[in-house]
Image 1 (cartoon, rainbow, N blue to C red):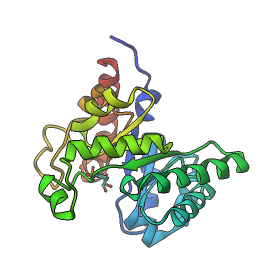
Image 2: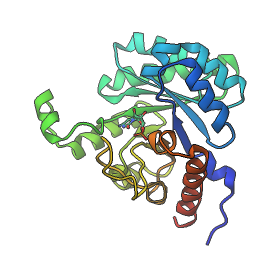
Image 3: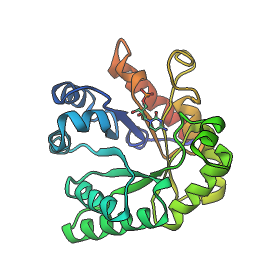
Length: 249
Ligand code: C5P
């Protein structure tokens, strides 16, 4: 069995700060600093608290994933990507359905801005198909391809446009790894322990152990930590599962 360091496992865990305001977010950051690899700031928190929450997380030497899933005309998304780099986020994302040109311009704007500022380039991920959509929903929107075909198509488009990787459900990890190789970053939400499965709205779930074993580079976890009676203990348990998953790969 491989010996996996606690840091290596911790770095893979991203905690979703799905809370309503700055104060609540900061109290989670204070509790979990050093116990997770990154904090995810999504649409709810960013709309409520703005860049201030990102600055506060970065001041504590913690990493930030800005999950705003940009989708607009290329010049607008390029501007947003540059603004994300100015906030010194470590990871951010766009919708792959914005198209090749949009992703390419976002990548180019982000890389040149971070190079100019002397910062490490952030990871730029593309969302292929939201895990809340199934084949019927895709047909309703007007897509002809099945979910699987569309995920592969959009991931290929994102890779060709220079994206670092994709956000993908646990069940797509294997297919994406086989098609796009080891360097393509895969981030997986919808993580549940067997005990928690089927108790909320996440449908295509997998344990942290299985997701990492299948090849996820990062996992995003929200409620399994936030709703736990002892959040820090739940967090440590997930890090142990990640370490076991890495060792079993
Ligand atoms: O609470 P839970 O662990 O389900 O949180 C998962 C996080 O990942 C949420 O912030 C959610 O918005 C995000 N996410 C997801 N499915 C996607 C993309 C993002 O659950 N396809």
